[in-house]
Length: 290
Image (tube, rainbow, N blue to C red):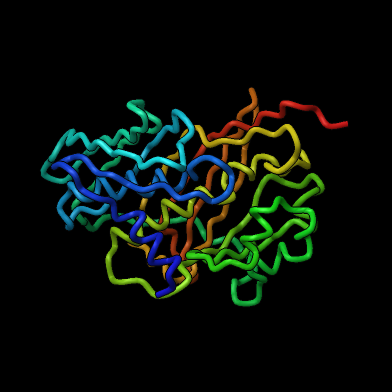
């Protein structure tokens, strides 16, 4: 296992300091505030550690309240709302400097058999023939912020490949608000379903709300753009293997009021719909471009 993947797993594992209280360290990815997927993955990890292992997560609904400070750890306070015969409910509040920066409700369920149907997997290019994110951005390195240029040559815990990349990721032409992203852990992972779910939650915030920017020909790097996650929801339909390729197929049905709505479907490479996602985010342009 790579060092950076091991570090990410440790980041999600958390330190338990009381029965329902956990502490997580923060990771600086270069943009000054805590990556939303980190808080999401850590909060799910905290909730999961208070639930019997035979009850996997089936849904979570979260709101981002304040930016996280990358220089400080985050406390996760878990409220054991309900332990029913089939379902278990948890509420998690993430705290920094005595204030809530995030809260989440998560529901867990005993495994049951029942009716099944699903959407078909979209017809996109398979990951094996696609460039890595580093390869995709290498030709634009001189136009990227310094921290992104440094990441082009650094080891990453998660491999990402875009099935439909922009011709120019810095100054993209307007296009339909949809994208498809392949992702998987850089190396094999242990057989721990809860860990795989937390890693999927962590990765699901990557490239998500920015899909709502595609029709407008701007990116989160465009001067004057303020882009931030406001909420995030996930539904887990089946166990996932995050060390195997997963496709996050994303579309944005609407943007209004400086907010963009995005929704996604996560498929295994063999076409099984394993999770669904949704998010609303702030997409505010403070300085109008000429």
